[in-house]
Image (cartoon, rainbow, N blue to C red):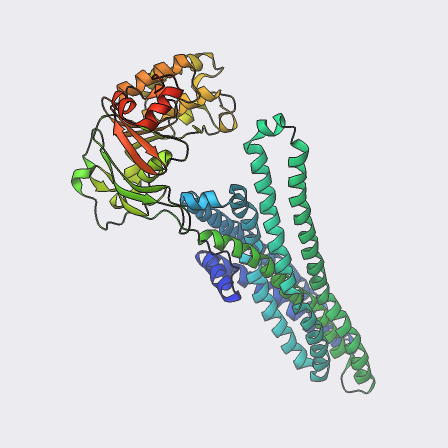
Length: 588
């Protein structure tokens, strides 16, 4: 099971540091620029105090005014440059996170991919990573510069008057403590809002994935209501997060305003009693207003951190999902395997399989052997475990018990890339990807030549389709091949597999949507391919496999019988019944 728990504060900081570490020098540069700007601001109240003192004595103030102007201009320029560096770095952090997530998602185990809605996974890559932008750089730098400027300002204020500093600290601690209570609520509301955004993606992916069915069923309003319900949940939690953020964001001004009133009262009394000059009170009040920015940065940093913590937690959940393992064997692969060519052999030795402990077994001591070349068909009732045979060969799942061997070697010891490069696989629903027809054909064989493509088009009877398409091979086929018929999609999937020139060809109900003429033609193509490679076929329509070299009959996760069509029709009752229902043999 996947660990879906939220991260602790320490784990969140560790994960955040891992994202920022590759960009630490850019963040350091942005921090230095921010500190330089803050230093310029810190000097302004002292310069103002000197200006007031000189005005009181009648001295010239031109130099101080020029100095103040230079400080303002330089501070603004440096801060602007630092802000650009940080924004660029933040985008780089988001890019790196998305690249890592996408690479991991495409290597997920099939079981995990089937367990989690694709729309939710997509929202982690798009929506959640966006929240990293602020927390990865702005929150870090804002917290650092805010803290430094805050401390520096208090040091300067202590230098001016300790009594007024005590008054200020009392007010700031009181209001700051109230603001700290709000921060966890921001994190909670943000995480729930992001979860709801994921639900929106899930609902949309569900509707778009069966768009024609939605329309044919008159379900547009119901599906719209489903999406709207998720959108309302996102809105509700987003508003709640905004409410607590606004409360936290207003505390900095509240703290300064209350401190200003308290300092004005106490400071005015001290000026009246002659304990401090009026210039000291003015400088102190300027530092109070200067505190608005560092306090605001600290509050913003805390808010961004709480938002980012929710996003980091959801991203980390994806990073904890199990991915496909590398080959178990260490070191270089045996040299002889790199030169192996020709048909591949397949053998199952007492294979058992179930998806998770506690679930029923799909395979129970399944054993059979397929030598190189020829066609082997798998038939049986639905749920007998036929398609699972292909999933175990491809290592989409790992056998619970027993061994699956290709070329006499356990698939667990094969490199996944090498194993799958030897296999051509046509799935039951024959998926076609958005893009052009050419892109779909060469998807598994990107180095295929035009001659290779022409040959496979002719063999799968797709050449007539290409001739009538407006842009030939470069015609877009639509989302999931929506511009092609079901039979055309199946032929594209078969052509894609053949173009790979596999040593082992797996066809899972690959002709179920073909008309009789095209089915007969494809049967001839498969029979021709079977002379030079190993072909495994799963079929419910027995007419497609009556000429197979061997037929494996499966029932309830076990191998019931193995033989030719004639042998099984005469010797196995289940096969005879299947054949009779399809008018291939007389009813016994």
